[in-house]
Length: 101
Image (cartoon, rainbow, N blue to C red; front, side):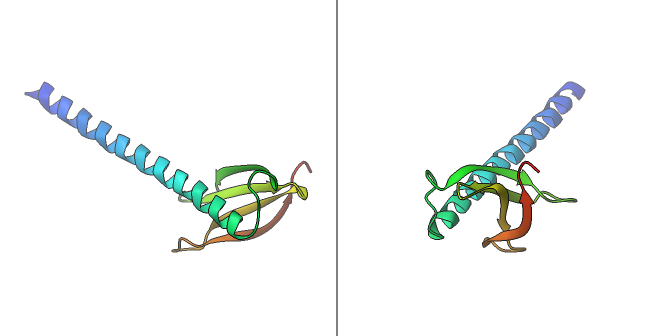
């Protein structure tokens, strides 16, 4: 009986963790896609105007995605895009962090 209970608890934990991972991966993919769509709507060519683009967590107490984008015409500046609070609208954070300095 105890063994079945243990297996049940382990199964619930694994299902919960798996659901969490799938949800996070889905959110991350959506964030990347939304950022790419936003940049294209601003007139950027993803293939020719961007040197690199990667996701980071900028949240202190809870996860908050930001996309770091470096453009060909400003290769030393990291631009941070994130969602406005309680919104799905992306905006550019004014950070002016220079890459390589």
